Image 1: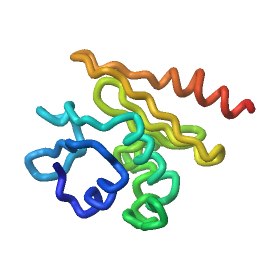
Image 2: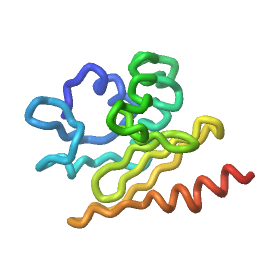
Image 3: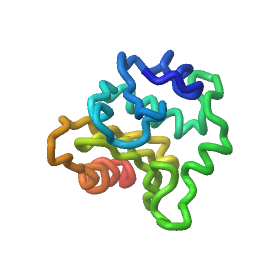
Length: 140
């Protein structure tokens, strides 16, 4: 389990028993062992809520608002990507191993989560969010 100061307070809200980390103590990419995190769809939604609420969970700031802004700002090498978050037309998304997704639509105050079964071919399901979930909410 991660001992990172930014993760520990979130553990109160996130119920996952295991949060994999790389040898340097930071979990940020799929490395041997990281693909087996046991974050539930509810846990992924809570991460989305943390970002949607600019770093606040249950009234407590656990990530600085400045970091959230930096994280969601396009980087100089890719105008569609921040700090491990994709910048979409209507919001933000992070995508993980096997098709795990957190999608945030700030104007609609909405988070969608896709929890998929991890497979060796690592699937993506961005079309489900874009073509079904986002359209059904944005059009309402």
